[in-house]
Image 1 (tube, rainbow, N blue to C red):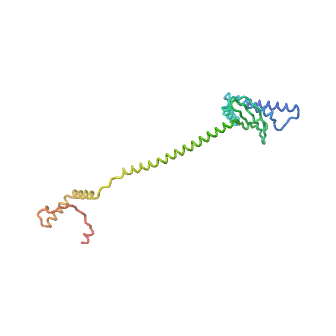
Image 2: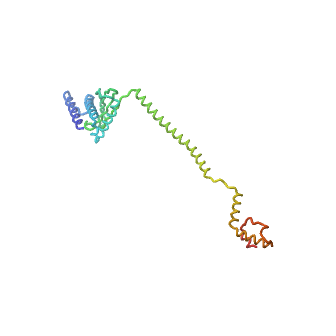
Image 3: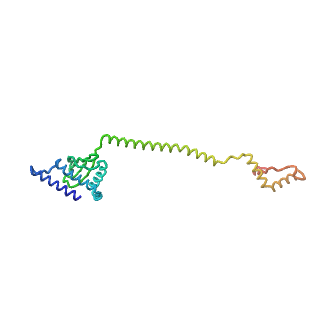
Length: 240
């Protein structure tokens, strides 16, 4: 950074002294010739710093650091830096914008350098590569293709997920059918219950059979069989 400021200050002083030889020193905007000299020096120095890999030394200076990163990225399309072919200068409020035309082995570019009025502080450095119409159309077509391909891929994925819902519902129905127990016939249940009642109340059955035989005046219980025993309603016994 110090080297850049020293070089920039020397160029500014030289241009001012040269202007004083023919007329009074100008305190206003710099000319295109002065902008070309300043811009060429800055671009040359920037290309040297990037080629030497010394960008990280300027991390604490965002304007220069971002400008160096932009130049480094643009060199992939520019190719070999071959110099400067011209420059122009414009003024906006308290800023001086120098646009430098850069020549490259593959593509040309414009480097816009924005400084303050004192030409001592960098506000920003931007590199714009010149592409042909065919290259611009090819990039636009590629971006469109990638975008549409992504959209179609997402739609296909969503349709596959939705189609899986039918298989999930069928699987759940099959699981429910397997878990549901088969119904048992009512008569079979009643017969089993009657047998259980008789088997559990064998002594009671014998007592009741003997009582019935005594009531009938029979010598034994062979003439009848007790098949079931049911509890009677207590209210009926109470009403009797």
